[in-house]
Image (tube, rainbow, N blue to C red; front, side, top):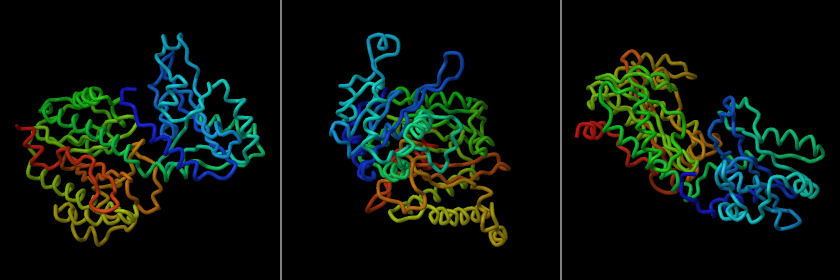
Length: 430
């Protein structure tokens, strides 16, 4: 891992909070992700299961965490299972966690090698009535690949058919959505790295540059600051490309007079940042571009003020829709007849702003959080309104990552990243 060590107290607290919500005489198991093949002997870079990382801080494959608050022996109430390391593995694959290092990283005192799992698991299952399975129930989940977790669930249901089973996910959805101060510090680091990348490209962009060259500048800055790279596939969309919401080809030339929509964010210690900015290729917005830009920025600023404890996600988006409708009327993009005759299920503004305004962010870019429950302090949301005008050859999206505060205004983790149109012009033309 490139990132600095994380205080193990975070993971100790996370496990304690999870176990406090488990049923009596129940245990829970969490598996690492697989390393996924590409072809021949090639594999994709390993990314840890975010749930296992949240509860342990372990960032290597073939790892398992078992939690059993009512275990007969105290040492079996938290157990970590790891692949046994040795000198041969160290030479070929690099250093793996030793038992001592695992305890230091996680705060889990009992560490076994993975080859011992079946024996110990059978013993503990004789003491338990219920097992918690960790299924992916995120509202955007669309998983076609059988995961290591899936295989474990299938095997365990067959081996222990008389046990009851329960779901870990609803507990994790609530716990993970509310960030610990240590997590907020990590997310701030991710946003700071993103800021460095953005300031770098403001000095770099000029007419004739290729979208992928901008992507490369971001990657250089991210890797130079202990990030693994992009938290998600980056969007570098010039001209009309910005009107394709998930444009990721990043292979076109940026031309004088165009705008570039940048939707990028650095990862740091498995935590995501998520930023959108729109900049002029020439370093100067046209009058029309700036009018639309400032309208989007006003919606973003007003929407941010609504992110307070007790706000309901659905009602929040309805209010943002009203703000956007007002701005589109002011720009002459909509007229009153469009609004009067709109379909309530697809309001008129949706033709030009068709996506949502906010999503949870954390260990996942689209992080865990139960959308029908009121917003809480220390949840982190993106705020990302946009206006897309393919007939005029540009689209504008602006996005920050914002922490909900118990009292007072929301805290913008991207407060230092330039966003005002005049400031962007000034930096690009200094």
